[in-house]
Image 1 (cartoon, rainbow, N blue to C red):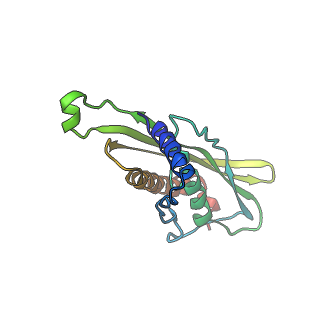
Image 2 (cartoon, rainbow, N blue to C red):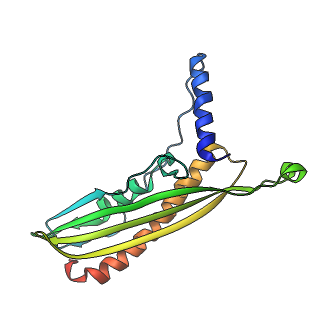
Image 3 (cartoon, rainbow, N blue to C red):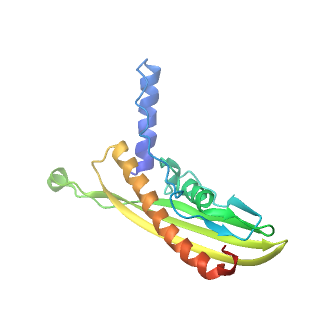
Amino acid sequence: MSLSRKVATAFFLLGLGVAGGCTTPPAQNAYPPIAFDDRAPLRLDVAEVVMEQAFQPTNEAPNVEHLFPETPADAALRWAGDRLVAAGTSRRAVFVVRDASVLEESLETSEGLSGILTVDQSERYSSNLVVELQIYDGTYLKGTAKAQAKRSVTVPEDLTLQEREAIWHQLTKDTMTDLNRELEQVIASTYGTYLL
């Protein structure tokens, strides 16, 4: 059974519990925001930095990024807010999130007696983050720095939802760490003359 179907079943059962007068369910685990404000800012010779979310989630299987404690898109936009600083008097930088998807893939698990005695890896989660940094002088595009980061992780079939959320959060964090490294390199190589 895919996770999205498990989550739908869980919400259905939760609804039955609420209708039956059950107590409030425990709150979802709180995770610290994935932030990069401890890193040196990238000071750009622009008058403003604009952030755009071009990625449109489907909220349907096999996509599961909307179920994450912090979506990759939100983490990428926070990166831009933490790292990119407008330190000039003209021009405009535009940070665009092109893709921030995470796909769930069901894996084959053991059946019969072997399935009872074995805890298999049941799902693979693959994240893909693609962002661009563009600099405009008026309406003229001076250039585009594009960065991409991909990660994947498999999970065992006996995970609780809270344990799965912890893995999702770590997947987003690891993907963002890779993206941060890639962005530092591509911005320096593409926009070296615009870094102050």
